[in-house]
Amino acid sequence: MAILIRDAQVSDSRAIGKVQLDSWRSAYAAFMPAAYLEKFSYEEQEADWHEILSAEPRPLVSVAEADGQIVGFSFGVPEGFEAYACELSILHIAPNYRGQGIGKKLFGEMARQLRAKGCASLCLWTLKENFPAHSFYERLGGQRFSEKTSEIGKDDIGFFVTDVAFGWPDINPLCEL
Image (cartoon, rainbow, N blue to C red; front, side, top):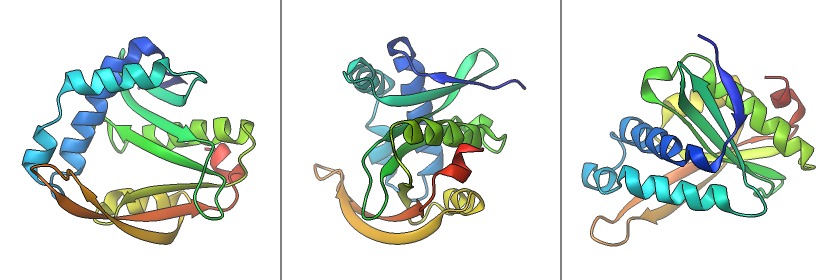
């Protein structure tokens, strides 16, 4: 299967929203209330991504295409946490395309884009219970360095989650992915 990694366009908003929501619902089902995950709609996600991708300056969002459709995306910001210069804020792969190297390709592309913005190090946050993600980040050389608990869905479906941070003090090896 050929994978194309490219910069996201505003016209990708619908596909990115679908990948994000499908990924959340499959990856987070064991950690978050079903009612919370079900309250999001594809239309809301599309609108959110339309707004993000229309912003100036242009955000760092890459998509992965396979089989003629968007199957993953990454979103990076040139601001970090603690000693880390930048952050990989979002990395989602469509459930049927996980385990095929797409996440690694998106991660590498985002690292290259962030390095081009002057970032020398990178961090990210993921749910403490999301052990498949932990394994993936550890295989890429990430080191766990922090933890925080926050409240999600404060309205009718409030709950707490704990996130852990992984960091890469040197972004260069990630740029070789």
